[in-house]
Amino acid sequence: MQSAQNVSTTANMTRVEALLGQMTLAEKIGQLTLVEKNSITLDDVETYFIGGLLSGGGGYPNPNTAENWGAMVNDFQKRALNTRLAIPMIYGVDAVHGHNNVFGATIFPHNIGLGATRNPDLVRRIARATAVEVAATGIYWNYAPALSVPQDLRWGRAFEGFSERTELVAEMAVAYLQGLQNPDGEPDLAAPTAVLGTPKHFVGDGGTAFGSSTTFIAVQYLLDQGITDVDEAMLRSLHLAPYFDVLAAGARCIMASFSSWGGMKMHANRYLLTDVLKGEMGFDGFIVTDWEAINQISGDYYEAVVTAYNAGIDMNMVPFDYKKFIHTLTQAVNKGDVSMERIDDAVRRILKVKLELGLFDRPYADKSLLPHVGSQEHRQLAREAVAQSAVLLKNDGNLLPLSKDTRLIFLAGEGNDIGLQSGGWTIEWQGKPGPSTTGTTVLDAFLDSDSTDSLVVFDRFGNFDDQVTADGKPLQADVAVLVLAEHPYAEGRGDRESLMLSDADRELVARVRARAKKLVIVLLSGRPLIITDELKQADAFVAAFWPGTEAAGITDVLLGDKPFTGKLSFTWPRSMDQVPLNGAKDKGEPLFPFGFGLTT
Image: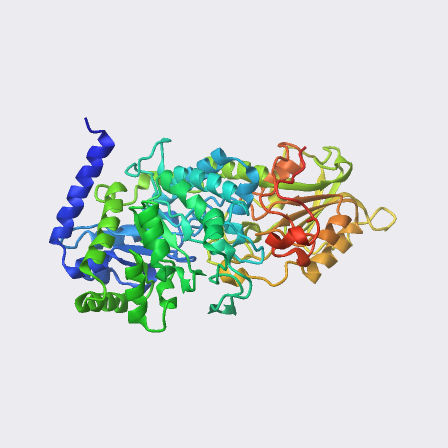
Protein backbone atom coordinates (compact mmCIF):
# COMPACT_ATOMS: atom_id res chain seq x y z
CA MET A 1 0.00 0.00 0.00
CA GLN A 2 1.47 3.37 -1.03
CA SER A 3 1.65 6.24 1.42
CA ALA A 4 -0.11 9.52 0.62
CA GLN A 5 3.32 11.13 0.15
CA ASN A 6 4.36 8.47 -2.38
CA VAL A 7 1.10 8.87 -4.26
CA SER A 8 1.61 12.64 -4.37
CA THR A 9 5.20 12.23 -5.55
CA THR A 10 4.14 9.84 -8.29
CA ALA A 11 1.36 12.19 -9.40
CA ASN A 12 3.75 15.12 -9.46
CA MET A 13 6.29 13.25 -11.55
CA THR A 14 3.59 12.16 -13.98
CA ARG A 15 2.53 15.76 -14.34
CA VAL A 16 6.12 16.93 -14.75
CA GLU A 17 6.74 14.45 -17.54
CA ALA A 18 3.48 15.44 -19.23
CA LEU A 19 4.51 19.10 -19.16
CA LEU A 20 8.03 18.34 -20.38
CA GLY A 21 6.61 16.39 -23.29
CA GLN A 22 4.67 19.45 -24.45
CA MET A 23 7.32 22.12 -23.88
CA THR A 24 9.24 23.84 -26.62
CA LEU A 25 12.91 24.70 -26.12
CA ALA A 26 11.93 28.33 -25.50
CA GLU A 27 9.50 27.30 -22.77
CA LYS A 28 12.13 25.07 -21.16
CA ILE A 29 14.84 27.73 -21.12
CA GLY A 30 12.33 30.24 -19.78
CA GLN A 31 11.90 28.00 -16.74
CA LEU A 32 15.66 28.16 -16.13
CA THR A 33 15.67 31.97 -16.10
CA LEU A 34 15.51 33.98 -12.85
CA VAL A 35 15.19 37.74 -13.37
CA GLU A 36 15.41 40.75 -11.06
CA LYS A 37 11.95 42.33 -10.99
CA ASN A 38 13.00 45.87 -11.94
CA SER A 39 14.72 44.56 -15.07
CA ILE A 40 11.73 43.01 -16.81
CA THR A 41 8.32 44.06 -18.10
CA LEU A 42 5.08 42.26 -17.45
CA ASP A 43 4.83 41.48 -21.14
CA ASP A 44 8.24 39.81 -21.20
CA VAL A 45 7.36 37.54 -18.28
CA GLU A 46 4.75 36.08 -20.61
CA THR A 47 6.70 36.35 -23.87
CA TYR A 48 9.79 34.55 -22.57
CA PHE A 49 8.00 32.04 -20.29
CA ILE A 50 10.04 33.29 -17.32
CA GLY A 51 10.33 30.69 -14.57
CA GLY A 52 11.37 32.90 -11.68
CA LEU A 53 11.60 36.50 -10.48
CA LEU A 54 13.28 37.99 -7.45
CA SER A 55 13.78 41.10 -5.41
CA GLY A 56 17.36 41.74 -4.45
CA GLY A 57 18.21 43.85 -1.41
CA GLY A 58 16.16 47.03 -1.74
CA GLY A 59 13.99 45.56 -4.51
CA TYR A 60 10.71 46.78 -3.11
CA PRO A 61 7.64 48.38 -4.72
CA ASN A 62 6.81 52.03 -4.20
CA PRO A 63 5.35 52.67 -1.71
CA ASN A 64 6.97 49.87 0.23
CA THR A 65 4.03 48.17 1.92
CA ALA A 66 3.16 44.51 2.36
CA GLU A 67 -0.04 45.11 0.38
CA ASN A 68 1.92 46.52 -2.55
CA TRP A 69 4.34 43.61 -2.43
CA GLY A 70 1.46 41.17 -2.80
CA ALA A 71 -0.09 43.16 -5.63
CA MET A 72 3.25 43.38 -7.44
CA VAL A 73 3.94 39.64 -7.20
CA ASN A 74 0.37 38.81 -8.23
CA ASP A 75 0.67 40.99 -11.34
CA PHE A 76 3.79 39.10 -12.42
CA GLN A 77 2.17 35.76 -11.61
CA LYS A 78 -0.90 36.55 -13.71
CA ARG A 79 1.32 36.98 -16.74
CA ALA A 80 3.18 33.74 -16.09
CA LEU A 81 -0.13 31.89 -15.85
CA ASN A 82 -1.25 33.47 -19.11
CA THR A 83 1.32 31.42 -21.03
CA ARG A 84 0.33 28.40 -23.11
CA LEU A 85 1.02 25.82 -20.40
CA ALA A 86 0.15 28.11 -17.48
CA ILE A 87 3.29 27.22 -15.50
CA PRO A 88 3.53 29.54 -12.48
CA MET A 89 6.65 31.52 -11.85
CA ILE A 90 8.35 31.35 -8.45
CA TYR A 91 9.28 34.60 -6.72
CA GLY A 92 12.30 34.71 -4.41
CA VAL A 93 13.64 37.11 -1.81
CA ASP A 94 16.44 37.31 0.76
CA ALA A 95 14.35 37.26 3.94
CA VAL A 96 17.42 36.49 6.01
CA HIS A 97 16.32 37.97 9.35
CA GLY A 98 12.62 38.43 8.83
CA HIS A 99 10.97 39.74 5.66
CA ASN A 100 13.66 42.39 5.78
CA ASN A 101 12.97 44.20 2.51
CA VAL A 102 9.44 45.12 3.60
CA PHE A 103 8.80 48.31 5.58
CA GLY A 104 7.01 47.40 8.79
CA ALA A 105 7.93 43.73 8.80
CA THR A 106 9.41 42.14 11.92
CA ILE A 107 13.21 42.22 11.84
CA PHE A 108 14.83 39.48 13.92
CA PRO A 109 18.44 39.21 15.10
CA HIS A 110 20.92 38.15 12.44
CA ASN A 111 22.19 34.57 12.50
CA ILE A 112 25.29 35.36 14.55
CA GLY A 113 22.97 36.42 17.37
CA LEU A 114 20.67 33.44 16.92
CA GLY A 115 23.67 31.15 17.22
CA ALA A 116 24.35 32.68 20.63
CA THR A 117 20.91 31.61 21.86
CA ARG A 118 21.75 27.91 21.49
CA ASN A 119 17.99 27.51 21.06
CA PRO A 120 16.95 25.65 17.88
CA ASP A 121 13.28 25.78 18.89
CA LEU A 122 13.47 29.58 18.99
CA VAL A 123 15.14 29.61 15.58
CA ARG A 124 12.41 27.32 14.23
CA ARG A 125 9.72 29.68 15.50
CA ILE A 126 11.50 32.69 14.00
CA ALA A 127 11.66 30.99 10.61
CA ARG A 128 7.97 30.08 10.90
CA ALA A 129 7.04 33.71 11.62
CA THR A 130 9.22 34.84 8.73
CA ALA A 131 7.56 32.34 6.40
CA VAL A 132 4.10 33.65 7.30
CA GLU A 133 5.14 37.26 6.63
CA VAL A 134 6.79 36.25 3.35
CA ALA A 135 3.80 34.19 2.22
CA ALA A 136 1.51 37.12 3.01
CA THR A 137 3.17 38.98 0.13
CA GLY A 138 2.76 36.13 -2.38
CA ILE A 139 6.37 34.99 -2.07
CA TYR A 140 7.06 31.30 -1.44
CA TRP A 141 10.83 31.18 -1.86
CA ASN A 142 13.36 32.44 0.68
CA TYR A 143 17.11 32.57 0.01
CA ALA A 144 17.91 31.27 3.50
CA PRO A 145 19.29 29.79 5.68
CA ALA A 146 23.01 30.40 5.30
CA LEU A 147 25.10 27.34 6.09
CA SER A 148 28.29 29.39 6.13
CA VAL A 149 30.89 28.41 8.71
CA PRO A 150 32.89 31.68 8.90
CA GLN A 151 36.56 31.24 9.68
CA ASP A 152 37.70 34.85 9.36
CA LEU A 153 35.79 37.64 11.11
CA ARG A 154 37.01 40.16 8.57
CA TRP A 155 34.54 38.61 6.11
CA GLY A 156 31.60 40.91 5.45
CA ARG A 157 29.15 38.03 5.67
CA ALA A 158 30.31 36.67 9.03
CA PHE A 159 27.02 37.76 10.62
CA GLU A 160 25.14 35.40 8.27
CA GLY A 161 26.81 32.43 9.93
CA PHE A 162 25.25 30.92 13.03
CA SER A 163 28.69 29.95 14.30
CA GLU A 164 32.33 29.21 13.54
CA ARG A 165 31.56 25.59 14.52
CA THR A 166 30.07 23.20 11.99
CA GLU A 167 27.88 21.32 14.45
CA LEU A 168 26.11 24.44 15.71
CA VAL A 169 25.60 25.72 12.17
CA ALA A 170 23.99 22.43 11.18
CA GLU A 171 21.69 22.35 14.21
CA MET A 172 20.46 25.91 13.71
CA ALA A 173 20.18 25.67 9.93
CA VAL A 174 18.04 22.53 10.16
CA ALA A 175 15.76 24.27 12.66
CA TYR A 176 15.46 27.31 10.39
CA LEU A 177 14.70 25.21 7.31
CA GLN A 178 12.05 23.26 9.22
CA GLY A 179 10.46 26.50 10.35
CA LEU A 180 10.16 27.68 6.76
CA GLN A 181 8.94 24.43 5.25
CA ASN A 182 7.05 22.60 8.01
CA PRO A 183 4.07 24.75 9.09
CA ASP A 184 2.58 22.13 11.40
CA GLY A 185 5.81 20.49 12.46
CA GLU A 186 5.80 18.00 9.59
CA PRO A 187 7.18 18.43 6.05
CA ASP A 188 4.41 19.94 3.95
CA LEU A 189 5.63 22.29 1.25
CA ALA A 190 2.16 22.47 -0.23
CA ALA A 191 0.71 24.06 2.93
CA PRO A 192 -0.50 27.66 2.48
CA THR A 193 2.23 29.23 4.64
CA ALA A 194 5.08 26.91 3.67
CA VAL A 195 8.02 28.70 2.06
CA LEU A 196 10.81 27.01 0.13
CA GLY A 197 14.15 27.38 1.90
CA THR A 198 17.47 27.76 0.10
CA PRO A 199 20.50 26.54 2.07
CA LYS A 200 23.50 28.52 0.85
CA HIS A 201 26.17 29.00 -0.37
CA PHE A 202 27.37 25.66 -1.65
CA VAL A 203 30.11 25.16 -0.61
CA GLY A 204 32.91 26.73 1.46
CA ASP A 205 31.86 30.37 1.32
CA GLY A 206 32.86 30.87 4.95
CA GLY A 207 36.40 29.70 4.38
CA THR A 208 37.73 32.14 1.80
CA ALA A 209 41.25 33.44 2.31
CA PHE A 210 41.95 37.10 3.05
CA GLY A 211 43.08 38.94 -0.08
CA SER A 212 41.90 36.21 -2.45
CA SER A 213 38.85 38.01 -3.85
CA THR A 214 39.00 39.62 -7.28
CA THR A 215 35.52 41.17 -7.08
CA PHE A 216 35.15 44.93 -7.22
CA ILE A 217 31.66 46.37 -6.64
CA ALA A 218 32.09 49.98 -5.47
CA VAL A 219 34.99 48.73 -3.33
CA GLN A 220 37.57 45.99 -3.66
CA TYR A 221 36.33 42.88 -1.86
CA LEU A 222 38.92 41.24 0.37
CA LEU A 223 37.46 37.82 1.25
CA ASP A 224 33.94 37.62 -0.14
CA GLN A 225 33.73 35.60 -3.37
CA GLY A 226 37.36 34.62 -2.91
CA ILE A 227 39.19 31.29 -2.75
CA THR A 228 38.55 28.56 -0.19
CA ASP A 229 42.09 27.22 -0.01
CA VAL A 230 41.63 23.95 1.88
CA ASP A 231 41.99 20.32 0.90
CA GLU A 232 38.93 18.18 0.19
CA ALA A 233 38.95 16.52 3.59
CA MET A 234 38.74 19.92 5.31
CA LEU A 235 36.15 21.17 2.83
CA ARG A 236 33.98 18.17 3.62
CA SER A 237 34.36 18.13 7.41
CA LEU A 238 34.10 21.88 8.01
CA HIS A 239 31.91 23.26 5.23
CA LEU A 240 30.06 20.42 3.48
CA ALA A 241 28.86 18.56 6.57
CA PRO A 242 25.82 20.81 7.32
CA TYR A 243 24.42 20.13 3.84
CA PHE A 244 23.90 16.47 4.68
CA ASP A 245 21.73 17.56 7.60
CA VAL A 246 19.58 20.04 5.64
CA LEU A 247 19.08 17.55 2.81
CA ALA A 248 17.84 15.02 5.35
CA ALA A 249 15.54 17.74 6.70
CA GLY A 250 13.96 18.30 3.29
CA ALA A 251 15.98 20.93 1.43
CA ARG A 252 14.70 21.20 -2.16
CA CYS A 253 16.77 24.11 -3.44
CA ILE A 254 20.47 24.87 -2.94
CA MET A 255 22.22 28.10 -3.90
CA ALA A 256 25.76 27.81 -5.26
CA SER A 257 28.56 29.96 -3.88
CA PHE A 258 30.44 32.82 -5.51
CA SER A 259 33.63 31.40 -4.04
CA SER A 260 36.20 29.14 -5.69
CA TRP A 261 37.68 25.79 -4.79
CA GLY A 262 39.91 23.42 -6.70
CA GLY A 263 41.09 26.14 -9.07
CA MET A 264 37.64 27.10 -10.36
CA LYS A 265 34.53 29.05 -9.45
CA MET A 266 31.94 26.94 -7.65
CA HIS A 267 29.41 27.58 -10.42
CA ALA A 268 31.79 25.77 -12.79
CA ASN A 269 32.62 22.89 -10.47
CA ARG A 270 30.94 19.80 -11.92
CA TYR A 271 32.61 17.55 -9.36
CA LEU A 272 30.99 19.30 -6.38
CA LEU A 273 27.68 20.31 -7.95
CA THR A 274 26.89 17.15 -9.90
CA ASP A 275 29.11 14.33 -8.68
CA VAL A 276 28.94 15.18 -4.96
CA LEU A 277 25.70 17.13 -4.36
CA LYS A 278 23.42 15.50 -6.93
CA GLY A 279 25.18 12.15 -7.09
CA GLU A 280 26.81 11.16 -3.83
CA MET A 281 24.40 13.15 -1.64
CA GLY A 282 21.32 12.27 -3.69
CA PHE A 283 19.97 15.81 -4.04
CA ASP A 284 17.06 15.79 -6.50
CA GLY A 285 15.90 19.38 -6.02
CA PHE A 286 17.35 22.25 -8.07
CA ILE A 287 20.50 24.34 -7.83
CA VAL A 288 20.14 28.10 -8.29
CA THR A 289 23.02 30.46 -8.97
CA ASP A 290 23.85 33.49 -6.93
CA TRP A 291 23.43 36.99 -8.36
CA GLU A 292 25.02 37.12 -11.85
CA ALA A 293 27.51 34.54 -10.61
CA ILE A 294 28.02 32.52 -13.78
CA ASN A 295 29.41 35.66 -15.42
CA GLN A 296 32.49 35.23 -13.22
CA ILE A 297 33.34 31.86 -14.78
CA SER A 298 34.73 33.35 -17.95
CA GLY A 299 35.03 36.64 -19.80
CA ASP A 300 33.38 34.82 -22.70
CA TYR A 301 29.68 34.74 -21.78
CA TYR A 302 28.91 31.79 -24.07
CA GLU A 303 31.65 29.75 -22.43
CA ALA A 304 30.41 30.77 -18.96
CA VAL A 305 26.84 29.64 -19.68
CA VAL A 306 27.91 26.35 -21.23
CA THR A 307 30.30 25.60 -18.38
CA ALA A 308 27.75 26.40 -15.67
CA TYR A 309 24.99 24.24 -17.16
CA ASN A 310 27.27 21.34 -17.85
CA ALA A 311 28.53 21.64 -14.28
CA GLY A 312 25.02 21.17 -12.91
CA ILE A 313 23.44 24.62 -12.49
CA ASP A 314 19.65 24.45 -12.96
CA MET A 315 18.25 27.98 -12.58
CA ASN A 316 20.29 31.08 -13.42
CA MET A 317 19.83 34.23 -11.37
CA VAL A 318 20.65 36.28 -14.44
CA PRO A 319 19.54 38.82 -12.97
CA PHE A 320 19.44 41.61 -15.59
CA ASP A 321 19.99 40.75 -19.27
CA TYR A 322 17.64 37.78 -19.53
CA LYS A 323 17.34 38.07 -23.30
CA LYS A 324 21.08 37.60 -23.69
CA PHE A 325 21.04 34.57 -21.39
CA ILE A 326 18.08 32.97 -23.16
CA HIS A 327 19.65 33.55 -26.57
CA THR A 328 23.01 32.19 -25.42
CA LEU A 329 21.67 29.00 -23.84
CA THR A 330 19.40 28.40 -26.84
CA GLN A 331 22.41 28.72 -29.11
CA ALA A 332 24.41 26.33 -26.90
CA VAL A 333 21.67 23.68 -27.10
CA ASN A 334 21.28 24.08 -30.86
CA LYS A 335 25.03 23.68 -31.32
CA GLY A 336 25.14 20.62 -29.06
CA ASP A 337 27.39 22.25 -26.42
CA VAL A 338 24.66 21.74 -23.80
CA SER A 339 22.60 18.62 -24.28
CA MET A 340 18.82 18.52 -24.33
CA GLU A 341 19.12 15.85 -21.65
CA ARG A 342 20.82 18.39 -19.35
CA ILE A 343 18.14 21.00 -20.10
CA ASP A 344 15.35 18.52 -19.42
CA ASP A 345 16.99 17.48 -16.16
CA ALA A 346 17.14 21.10 -14.99
CA VAL A 347 13.54 21.83 -16.00
CA ARG A 348 12.32 18.60 -14.44
CA ARG A 349 13.91 19.51 -11.12
CA ILE A 350 12.39 23.00 -11.11
CA LEU A 351 8.90 21.86 -12.11
CA LYS A 352 8.95 19.12 -9.52
CA VAL A 353 9.70 21.61 -6.73
CA LYS A 354 7.06 24.04 -8.00
CA LEU A 355 4.50 21.25 -7.83
CA GLU A 356 5.66 20.19 -4.37
CA LEU A 357 5.32 23.81 -3.28
CA GLY A 358 1.71 23.92 -4.44
CA LEU A 359 2.27 26.85 -6.80
CA PHE A 360 0.06 25.31 -9.47
CA ASP A 361 -2.85 25.24 -7.00
CA ARG A 362 -2.27 28.46 -5.03
CA PRO A 363 -0.02 30.78 -7.05
CA TYR A 364 -1.18 34.09 -5.56
CA ALA A 365 -0.73 36.02 -2.33
CA ASP A 366 -3.16 35.22 0.46
CA LYS A 367 -4.39 38.63 1.64
CA SER A 368 -5.79 37.11 4.82
CA LEU A 369 -2.19 36.74 6.03
CA LEU A 370 -1.38 40.46 5.79
CA PRO A 371 -2.24 41.24 9.46
CA HIS A 372 0.65 38.95 10.46
CA VAL A 373 3.26 41.23 8.84
CA GLY A 374 4.92 43.07 11.72
CA SER A 375 2.32 41.73 14.14
CA GLN A 376 2.70 42.14 17.89
CA GLU A 377 3.00 38.38 18.22
CA HIS A 378 5.97 38.31 15.86
CA ARG A 379 7.54 41.37 17.47
CA GLN A 380 7.24 39.73 20.88
CA LEU A 381 9.03 36.68 19.45
CA ALA A 382 11.78 38.97 18.12
CA ARG A 383 12.07 40.60 21.55
CA GLU A 384 12.47 37.16 23.09
CA ALA A 385 15.21 36.36 20.57
CA VAL A 386 17.05 39.61 21.32
CA ALA A 387 17.11 38.84 25.03
CA GLN A 388 18.36 35.30 24.46
CA SER A 389 21.03 36.34 21.95
CA ALA A 390 22.63 39.05 24.11
CA VAL A 391 25.90 37.81 25.62
CA LEU A 392 27.16 39.25 28.90
CA LEU A 393 30.94 39.51 28.62
CA LYS A 394 31.71 41.42 31.82
CA ASN A 395 29.72 42.20 34.98
CA ASP A 396 31.93 43.60 37.71
CA GLY A 397 30.21 43.81 41.06
CA ASN A 398 27.09 42.28 39.56
CA LEU A 399 26.16 45.68 38.15
CA LEU A 400 23.66 43.97 35.86
CA PRO A 401 20.80 43.71 36.17
CA LEU A 402 20.59 47.40 36.97
CA SER A 403 19.07 48.21 40.32
CA LYS A 404 15.51 49.44 40.11
CA ASP A 405 16.60 52.14 42.58
CA THR A 406 19.00 53.64 40.04
CA ARG A 407 18.10 57.34 40.01
CA LEU A 408 19.85 58.68 36.91
CA ILE A 409 20.91 56.86 33.76
CA PHE A 410 22.81 58.59 30.97
CA LEU A 411 22.15 56.86 27.65
CA ALA A 412 24.67 57.67 24.92
CA GLY A 413 25.75 56.51 21.51
CA GLU A 414 23.49 54.77 18.99
CA GLY A 415 20.68 53.97 21.37
CA ASN A 416 18.00 55.55 19.21
CA ASP A 417 18.63 54.23 15.69
CA ILE A 418 16.54 51.40 14.20
CA GLY A 419 18.74 51.19 11.11
CA LEU A 420 21.99 50.75 13.02
CA GLN A 421 20.57 48.15 15.40
CA SER A 422 19.11 46.16 12.47
CA GLY A 423 22.31 45.98 10.42
CA GLY A 424 22.75 44.94 6.80
CA TRP A 425 19.99 43.40 4.70
CA THR A 426 17.38 45.73 6.23
CA ILE A 427 15.12 47.53 3.71
CA GLU A 428 18.22 48.16 1.59
CA TRP A 429 20.91 45.64 0.62
CA GLN A 430 23.55 47.36 2.74
CA GLY A 431 21.13 48.52 5.42
CA LYS A 432 21.22 52.17 6.44
CA PRO A 433 21.20 54.33 9.57
CA GLY A 434 18.10 56.10 10.72
CA PRO A 435 14.38 55.26 10.90
CA SER A 436 14.49 52.82 8.00
CA THR A 437 11.54 50.84 9.35
CA THR A 438 9.32 50.58 12.40
CA GLY A 439 10.31 49.16 15.75
CA THR A 440 11.64 49.90 19.22
CA THR A 441 15.04 51.44 19.92
CA VAL A 442 16.99 51.09 23.16
CA LEU A 443 15.87 54.60 24.14
CA ASP A 444 12.23 53.74 23.39
CA ALA A 445 12.54 50.61 25.48
CA PHE A 446 14.00 52.46 28.49
CA LEU A 447 11.34 55.13 28.34
CA ASP A 448 8.51 52.60 27.94
CA SER A 449 9.74 50.17 30.58
CA ASP A 450 7.65 49.52 33.66
CA SER A 451 10.70 47.96 35.32
CA THR A 452 12.42 51.17 36.36
CA ASP A 453 11.57 54.65 37.57
CA SER A 454 15.04 55.89 36.67
CA LEU A 455 15.42 59.22 34.95
CA VAL A 456 16.93 58.44 31.54
CA VAL A 457 18.76 61.26 29.79
CA PHE A 458 19.86 60.60 26.22
CA ASP A 459 22.54 62.26 24.13
CA ARG A 460 23.94 60.49 21.12
CA PHE A 461 27.35 62.15 21.43
CA GLY A 462 27.63 61.77 25.18
CA ASN A 463 27.47 65.53 25.76
CA PHE A 464 25.84 65.87 29.15
CA ASP A 465 27.23 69.32 29.91
CA ASP A 466 23.77 70.64 30.73
CA GLN A 467 23.39 68.04 33.46
CA VAL A 468 24.76 69.84 36.51
CA THR A 469 24.22 69.85 40.27
CA ALA A 470 22.54 72.69 42.14
CA ASP A 471 25.90 74.37 42.61
CA GLY A 472 26.77 74.07 38.92
CA LYS A 473 29.14 71.11 39.06
CA PRO A 474 28.98 68.35 36.40
CA LEU A 475 26.36 65.80 37.40
CA GLN A 476 27.54 62.22 37.66
CA ALA A 477 25.04 59.62 36.51
CA ASP A 478 24.62 56.58 38.71
CA VAL A 479 25.02 54.53 35.54
CA ALA A 480 25.75 55.33 31.92
CA VAL A 481 24.66 52.96 29.19
CA LEU A 482 26.70 53.49 26.04
CA VAL A 483 25.50 51.86 22.82
CA LEU A 484 28.25 51.41 20.24
CA ALA A 485 27.26 50.25 16.76
CA GLU A 486 29.11 48.90 13.77
CA HIS A 487 27.78 50.66 10.67
CA PRO A 488 25.56 48.33 8.58
CA TYR A 489 27.00 46.45 5.62
CA ALA A 490 26.42 43.34 3.56
CA GLU A 491 28.56 40.93 1.56
CA GLY A 492 31.96 42.06 0.29
CA ARG A 493 31.37 45.71 1.05
CA GLY A 494 31.63 44.69 4.68
CA ASP A 495 35.04 43.03 4.26
CA ARG A 496 37.40 44.80 6.68
CA GLU A 497 41.14 44.72 7.16
CA SER A 498 40.87 45.87 10.78
CA LEU A 499 38.28 45.01 13.42
CA MET A 500 39.31 47.82 15.76
CA LEU A 501 36.72 50.27 17.02
CA SER A 502 36.84 53.70 15.43
CA ASP A 503 38.64 56.65 17.01
CA ALA A 504 35.24 58.31 17.46
CA ASP A 505 33.95 55.28 19.39
CA ARG A 506 36.99 55.22 21.64
CA GLU A 507 36.66 58.95 22.34
CA LEU A 508 32.98 58.45 23.13
CA VAL A 509 33.82 55.71 25.63
CA ALA A 510 36.24 58.04 27.44
CA ARG A 511 33.76 60.95 27.40
CA VAL A 512 30.88 58.93 28.83
CA ARG A 513 33.07 57.10 31.33
CA ALA A 514 34.00 60.46 32.87
CA ARG A 515 30.34 61.34 33.53
CA ALA A 516 29.19 58.17 35.27
CA LYS A 517 29.91 56.22 38.41
CA LYS A 518 29.36 52.98 36.51
CA LEU A 519 29.52 52.28 32.78
CA VAL A 520 27.65 49.64 30.77
CA ILE A 521 28.71 49.25 27.14
CA VAL A 522 26.32 47.55 24.71
CA LEU A 523 27.93 46.67 21.38
CA LEU A 524 25.75 46.24 18.29
CA SER A 525 27.76 44.56 15.56
CA GLY A 526 27.78 41.98 12.82
CA ARG A 527 30.80 40.20 14.26
CA PRO A 528 33.21 40.25 17.20
CA LEU A 529 35.33 43.39 17.22
CA ILE A 530 38.54 44.21 19.07
CA ILE A 531 37.32 45.61 22.40
CA THR A 532 40.22 44.75 24.73
CA ASP A 533 40.90 48.31 25.84
CA GLU A 534 37.24 49.35 25.98
CA LEU A 535 36.42 46.30 28.08
CA LYS A 536 38.76 47.61 30.79
CA GLN A 537 36.87 50.89 30.98
CA ALA A 538 33.45 49.28 31.36
CA ASP A 539 31.95 47.84 34.51
CA ALA A 540 29.67 45.69 32.36
CA PHE A 541 29.88 44.81 28.68
CA VAL A 542 27.17 43.27 26.52
CA ALA A 543 27.52 41.90 22.99
CA ALA A 544 24.08 42.31 21.42
CA PHE A 545 25.15 41.82 17.79
CA TRP A 546 22.59 43.28 15.32
CA PRO A 547 19.36 42.61 17.20
CA GLY A 548 16.81 43.90 14.69
CA THR A 549 13.79 46.07 15.38
CA GLU A 550 12.90 44.93 18.90
CA ALA A 551 15.53 46.41 21.20
CA ALA A 552 13.26 46.03 24.22
CA GLY A 553 14.90 42.62 24.44
CA ILE A 554 18.12 44.45 25.40
CA THR A 555 16.50 46.41 28.21
CA ASP A 556 14.79 43.21 29.34
CA VAL A 557 18.19 41.78 30.28
CA LEU A 558 19.72 45.08 31.41
CA LEU A 559 16.86 45.66 33.85
CA GLY A 560 16.52 42.04 34.97
CA ASP A 561 13.13 41.22 33.48
CA LYS A 562 14.88 38.34 31.77
CA PRO A 563 18.22 36.69 32.60
CA PHE A 564 21.35 36.79 30.48
CA THR A 565 21.76 33.32 28.98
CA GLY A 566 23.53 33.90 25.62
CA LYS A 567 26.78 32.09 24.83
CA LEU A 568 29.27 33.19 22.18
CA SER A 569 28.97 31.26 18.94
CA PHE A 570 32.30 32.71 17.79
CA THR A 571 35.62 33.06 19.54
CA TRP A 572 36.34 36.70 20.40
CA PRO A 573 39.88 37.82 19.51
CA ARG A 574 42.06 39.81 21.89
CA SER A 575 43.90 41.62 19.11
CA MET A 576 44.23 41.69 15.35
CA ASP A 577 47.24 39.40 15.75
CA GLN A 578 44.75 36.61 16.50
CA VAL A 579 42.76 37.12 13.29
CA PRO A 580 41.90 34.87 11.54
CA LEU A 581 40.75 32.84 14.50
CA ASN A 582 41.64 29.51 12.96
CA GLY A 583 45.24 30.41 13.78
CA ALA A 584 44.55 31.79 17.27
CA LYS A 585 45.80 28.70 19.09
CA ASP A 586 49.33 29.65 18.12
CA LYS A 587 48.86 33.31 19.14
CA GLY A 588 47.81 33.18 22.77
CA GLU A 589 44.48 32.97 24.49
CA PRO A 590 41.59 34.86 22.90
CA LEU A 591 39.75 37.57 24.80
CA PHE A 592 36.73 35.27 25.14
CA PRO A 593 36.55 31.63 24.07
CA PHE A 594 33.78 30.03 22.04
CA GLY A 595 30.84 29.37 24.36
CA PHE A 596 31.64 32.12 26.87
CA GLY A 597 28.77 34.03 28.42
CA LEU A 598 28.00 35.14 31.95
CA THR A 599 24.55 34.56 33.38
CA THR A 600 22.37 36.59 35.71
